[in-house]
Length: 221
Ligand SMILES: Nc1ncnc2c1ncn2[C@@H]1O[C@H](COP(=O)(O)OP(=O)(O)OP(=O)(O)O)[C@@H](O)[C@H]1O
Ligand SMILES: [Mg+2]
Image (tube, rainbow, N blue to C red):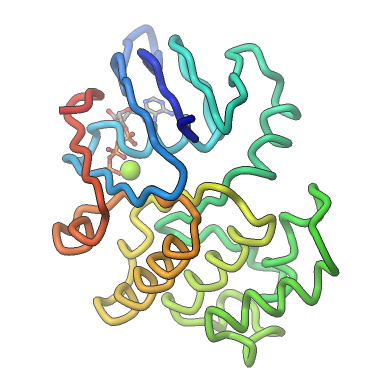
């Protein structure tokens, strides 16, 4: 059974009476354990696709099944958030760490909403150790380099042991060396079984995925 199944998914934004068709009739199946890259020009709908898959946004029409469960267009915010919290880990280009929390507190955040297995603080420390940041637990995000911030974001995304990690241009704000470190961490994660969806403009990074899909004007091409 597919982990992610999109059937004729469309997303239309209406701004001041003008429709923007960000996704048009997208059919996509993603199997457990896949590593898939999403490419396409700016504005082609890559982030919208990630946001719909990641339950941060609702499609306008179409059917979506995640981990065997139908995602209803009518599901409330709380129900969506609960499902997201247990199945999805998100990594963004701009890191999205909370500036007033230190590294450890940022990683602990997702566990506030979901029951995690084991002791949350020891799990967070373990994850930070795996991304090479055990010496930065009390630092604030502003006191970290870009690559370090993204490694914190990865640890945070993994806190609830998600089935899928969605990474939307995770190396877009990083120099090539830090970007390479981030991709290596994500690859390692995928080798251990986590399904990985990576949006990137970088051909070389995309080639590391086992499947590449291309988008144009909201459609898969
Ligand atoms: N909240 C929104 N309201 C209105 N239009 C939106 C909204 N979000 C995205 N769009 C529009 O939908 C289209 C797809 O946007 P999206 O962010 O998915 O593109 P993208 O492929 O991720 O581009 P980039 O490579 O620049 O990140 C664009 O035309 C964009 O302007
Ligand atoms: Mg985008």
